[in-house]
Each structure stands twice: as C-alpha cells, then as structure tokens.
Image (cartoon, rainbow, N blue to C red; front, side, top):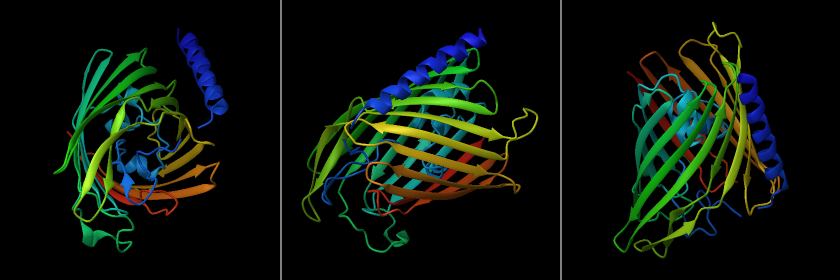
Length: 326
C-alpha cells in the first residue's frame, strides 16, 4: 500500500511540475503595489521561522504555523498542543500584523486548527531601523479568522484546506473577503517530505491612499499560484534529533513571467539556538531577496526573530514569533 501511495504522489508531483513550467503569468498584489499609493494588507501570514527560510517550507511540518503555507502539514505535525504569536512590522508603510495560532485538535485521521489576526496602522514608528517609511501609511484595520482542516492517510500522506475570512474597515467603508488554500504533503520518512500548495481563489481587501487623512478601501481577485517543494532533514536516523534542515520550493504565479525559486536552511548545532537563512529569486526580473533569522528554543518556549530588508520587494519587514508548548 505504501508503494502505491508513493507512486500516486510522485505522479501528481510530476504532473503539477509540468503544468507550472508550461504556464506563463500577473503580479501578486497581496504583497506588492502598482504605485506608492495603492496596496493590499498581507493575506498570507507566514511565521517568523518560515519567513527566515524564504517562505520555502511548503513541505516542512515543523510546527502548527505550517497551516499558513501548506494546510496539509497540519495532519503530520507531531505537537498539536502549542500556541504561537507572530508580530510583524512592515517597514515600508508601518502596517502592523499580530497573528495568533491556537492549539489544534486531532480525532483519528482528522485534524483541525484555528487562528486569528489583526492588521492595523499606527505601528511602532520608533522601531523602524531603516529610517522614515518609504510609502504612505494607509488608514486601515483588518481582522482575519482562519480555519484549517487536514485528512491523514496511512500517516505519510495528508490533504488539507485552509479557509480565510477577512474583514477590513476604516472611517469610509468596509469589506468582507474570503480565500482558501489547498495543500498536499507526503512524508515517506522522518528525513524527507514533499509538498504542494495552491493559492489564489477568492478575493482580498485593497486600499488607496489619497492623502495623510484619507484612505479608500476596495477588493481584488487574488492572483493564483502553485508551489512545489521538498524538505530534507539531517541526520536521517529516526533516533537522532535533526540539527540541519534544508527546504527548497518553486512557485509559479500565474500571469507573471518566470518562477520564484526559494531555498532556506536551519542549523541547530548549538543547544537552545537555531540559525536560519533563506533566499528568494525571481527568474524573469532577476530579483534577489535574502532573509535572515534566529531562534531561542527550549522544551517550553521558543522565541524567533526574522528580518527581510530587500528593496527589490514591496514589503521590507521584521517579525517576532513566540511559541509556547503546553
């Protein structure tokens, strides 16, 4: 049975890869703008660890925050009794994001998780280490509720869906939007895993800054993307705790030329410390975006920090993550 599942997943992976390579592509306005006045709050809420590893962890079910990049990872996460808080500041326009991931539950082969987030202006202006904001600060508040579900098959294959409901408002208008993410994760061993995630159905809020005191709201169709990736842990023996992890992924954003190549590494050779780094590369525009981060780990609490400062991307940010193991 395991051989049949592995063969089935390999066929899906190869077919999806061929579809990605043959497709051509539109800018992902979730994290970019057409000008300094128009933009959209960050819909996809990656953790500090994922951010430090260049968002390449589509196949890495390390902790509950995997639901934001691949909801299928929920079915293979070992520790569901953890809660996580991520606080991010966009240095470009000083928008803040606080995301709360609650402990998940599992009933047989079914797993469920819940999280909520708040996006708002009036961030920590004095903590902008890059100087003044390069873009105007929109007057907007957005709250999000996320529900994730995963079905596990034979403890090696997981299918998942992540549903996001967003409510954005300011003094002028308000908008409700909804978008799902679909994922598959296959982990034939402790050492290696493969993942696929599809995003882009539904809509997201947008804003337009007219002056220091006026921001109008709208909504847009999300650009669709398909991401394929793998994660390798070393050492590969099950009795040993991995101290080196490398994740690689390719993302195709439909309507946009080229592919996004992502690679991230994590090293845990020093007790209670984790060092992380990653790189995003866009082949059509020759864009490089490095990421850096570290974590202080223990059996009870983990504190992670990430910085992304590339001027080639719309969003330059730093992020703090706190994970509590119950």
